Structures are given as structure tokens and as C-alpha cells.
Amino acid sequence: MPTSSPGGVEVVTFGCRLNTYESEAMQRHAQDAGLGEVVIVNTCAVTAEATRQARQSIRRIAREKPGARIVVTGCAAQVEPETFAAMPEVSQVVGNHEKMKAETWAGMRDFGVGASERVLVNDIMAVKETAVHLIDGMRGRTRAFVQVQNGCDHRCTFCIIPYGRGNSRSVPMGAVVDQVRTLVEHGSREVVLTGVDITSYGKDLPGEPKLGTLVKGLLRHVPELERLRISSIDSVEADDDLFDVIASDGRLMPHLHLSLQAGDDMILKRMKRRHLRQDAIAFCEQVKRLRPDMVFGADIIAGFPTETEEMFARSLDIVEECSLTHLHVFPFSPRPGTPAARMPQVARDVVKDRARRLREKGEAALLKHLREEVGARRNVLIESNQLGRTEGFTLVRFAQAVTPGEIVPVTIAGHDGKELLAA
Image (cartoon, rainbow, N blue to C red; front, side, top):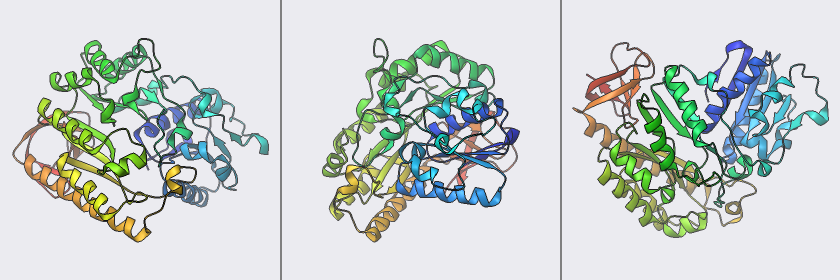
């Protein structure tokens, strides 16, 4: 939940990397509009807990900054505008489409809004396209996020996000190439392609280019780009061009974060996922053959409705079967308005226990990876004066200060159980 505050405009961000990108854009729009003493809360709706945390944060901000005007936006604000409008601490609620428009923030300049104008949230399903937003705000960053897609056409039974983001829509390839080129010209060493469902990229564009087509085009047309990452993918939608570039171009970093969610076929079907257990295992095996140094992360939900102990055991097992290293574990929490919320629920204490066991499995997998990295030679992109990341996205700590933005070849001397240690 990073907070930034140049120019009197603060942004508190919850959730995904796409939200991080959009927070950067909103902050610049608000600053350009001349707003001051404003706190923008960019919410997440992936779980009911995320929405609760956003409300809690809003109350804390109001206590700590009694003179500030609080604007709430993001997915939770899109799907539950009335919840936030009812909070006395909130000055205005802004939808996901409206938040990316400069005119939205320019219209707040005087904050002369009546009660009927406090909620600026329109039908997200009516939005048919997405665009490049405010590149200047990301210039000079060691690592920059570039939105290539927004929304989702799928309806997983646990997920409310399509109702916060709308249907899938893609940024045209030429616009993405231009943005990445500009970022590189202004100092970015690494670019991360981000979106809600980026492996659905291109279905709404002329010729229906795939994600792999976009990645190949970027690497070809921006040869100065040193490192390119893909934020998160749905393996069932990986295309031949993506497999080809994984195998052939070292500038695409060897780290993929997979949207797995479970390791049991029946649970995957009840989630309305489009892959089965063996599909995920086969994908990871194929990628490992093409790129032996590939490191996998994954999202897994513990305690999905109807999950038995045997079903959960298959999620535990898939950590090893897919060679997962960086695990994001989500204890299932029913999201009102989703089909999964109406399914037979697993007891909360069981859900918490399974999440704990899954996290322990993830910690053991990470420890195994750290041990295997000792003695290896890695090129580390420095993010702060003592921290950087390898090509495989593993954190490396330096004993002495190093210069952010540099890519430094290092020998891995050891680890502390959570991070690698540079020689």
C-alpha cells in the first residue's frame, strides 16, 4: 500500500500492479489540475477483506489528516459506490473509467460538489476501449509498468473484478511500442507489461494479435529495452509466439506469475477456470524445457467452497509439480455478488489453517530456490541503495550501498531465508 505525496496530492494504493500504474496517472492528473490537500484512495475488490481494509484506511487517513479531502476510486468503489459514498470521511467516489480522465480531476478543482455529484461512477461494461495514460509520471523509474490491457471477459465464480473493470479491451500495439520507447529514452531499464487479463490481449484489435505478437514486436522495435517482464498470465491462453520469444530472447526475463488458483480439477471447474491440473503442469514443463532458468510464481486460493482435505492436498502438491517459487496465497473469503459466495462454505478455521499450510509450502519452495541460487552469477537490477532483483525476480541484498537503476553482475554468496545475499 505505497503512499506518495509530491505536490500535495497523496495516493494510497491497494491491490494489483495495474492499480500502481493507474495511481501514477491519477496523481499527475490531480497535480496538473492544481489540487492540493487531497488523498486519493485507489481500492481493490479482489476479496471482501480488501474492501474492508480500504474502509479502515479511509478512517485512519481522516483521523491523521483532518483537513484533507478524500477521493475514493478503484475496483471496490466501482462495484460498491454506495458503501463509500455513505462514509462521512469521503468527499467523492470516482469510477474506474472516470479516474483515468484528466477532465475528472480538473472538474474537482473547486470541490463545489453537491450530494448528487459526490458519486461519479458510470457503467463500466459500456466502456469499449482503453488507452495509454500519462507516460510522464512513469519516466525515470528503474522499473516501469505499462498497461496493455484492461478488463476481463471471463467469469470465474469467485471474482468480482470484471464488474469493477469491465470487459477486456486492449491498447493498440503501436501505442504500446511508442510508450515503451519513450520510457526507455527517459531512463527505464526494465518494463513490466500489466493488465487485468493480459493473455487475452488483442482479441478486440484489428487482426486479433496475441500477447506473444505484442512481446515480439516490442523487443524488435525497441532494441534499446534491456529487460521486459510480463506481470501475470493465464497459461491456457499462451500462444506460439509467446513460447517462441521465451525460448529465443533473453531480454524477456525468466519469471512468469501464473493464475493457477487451485490444483484440483473439481475445484477448478467450480471456480469456472479454463484449465485443468494437467494443463498447468504441462505448461510449466514446456516452458522449463524452453527456458531452464525460468522461475514461476502463482496465485492459489485456500479453502474454496466445497474443498475437501483431499482436494486441498492436490493444491499443496502442485507447488512442487509446477516448480513454483513465489507463492501468493489467498484464504478464500466470500465476495457478495459472486456465485462462489452462494456455494457451501468451508469453515473459517479450516480455511485459515489451509492458507497457513500453503504459505509454509511456499516458504519451503522459496528456500529451496534460494539455496540453488548460491554460487550463481546473476545480473541484478538495483531498486534501492541496498536491494535489487535478479532476472528471475528474486530479491538480492547488498552489504554496501549501490546505485539505483544500475544493472550489476554479481555472484550470489548466500541467503538469509528470504533474500539472496550478494558477494
